[in-house]
Length: 217
Image 1: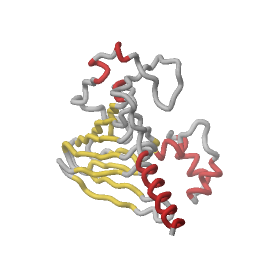
Image 2 (image 1 turned 60 degrees about the horizontal axis):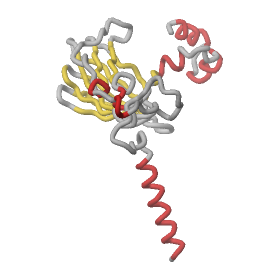
Image 3 (image 1 turned 90 degrees about the vertical axis):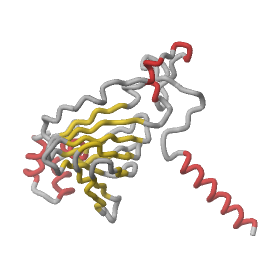
């Protein structure tokens, strides 16, 4: 009986710990405005002297400005994370505006440190994410103005504008610095290149196909 009780308590403790560490650590003070010139290297950024903190440290202007989508994929992400707002340091949140040209895409990518919740402001988007191995199941949906869709932390996801006009979305993320890994860039545009032999075997294609794709990145 005592053994069962002990296992239950251990299980509850593990569950509490997993919830506690599911996102950025909770702050232990009112704020910790990032000091980009701080000499201390920590998991995040060191704190600016609180007596030197100003309103500007918590402010960003420009999210109303449309991003330039004249690129190969037809989209532009305007990130608002701790690099733009030092006051986000230790608070575990960030934001991004995503602009899409007609039929533009935000290519398959992941955020290694954050769950994303996307709200459509204008247009119609096809959105989706892929579950992890071995299922690799695609979960997708068409979303419209005012709709909200969630991309779980770490999973490959994408958006595509399926309308004939521009589209805009706002994404909130559960990290001050969520990171982004664009799948195609990481696989075919690494520096130095991943060996074409490895990629040819991984994708089950001819090596020349891999070399052709790598040349585009």
